[in-house]
Length: 212
Image (cartoon, rainbow, N blue to C red; front, top):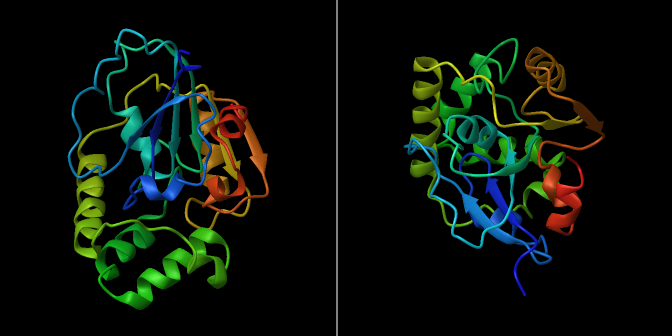
């Protein structure tokens, strides 16, 4: 049986596929992208039987996905989750002092614990988050590279996103900054009372796709 379609998922900074391993695929062909220290100009071309693609990006993966050329794909929809096209911005993203503070102090285990607590919404859930196998030094280098790339190159226009989810309890990307950013782009918004780690709320990719 052919897959329903292809989900092209860009996970958050510092993550790997472990962050969404709890989501049932439900007949979709899933491609997961991570590690944005370097980015190719375009995603891999679709295989002949890929069918329609749905782009889903979370957190800093929103910025990463928007930088790629999607012309070879037939994207049915593009859903941004708790992120914007501006990773480091006082108006449309993460405040620069917080972004840089995270990068500067990521080597400190206490700083990582505080970040995970803000991301998941509470300290207990922070200890349960599946960070995968990324070393702190690798994650730190990735965040520094994202800052450098984002400051050097403005986001493309138009973006591949057709809808956005704003978690009103997000303590990483301020909800008001997300609202301003997507209103600026003319992208429809949906707001739910979710923390930055919104994907742990769902149990399948079908649920996620239906948010768009």
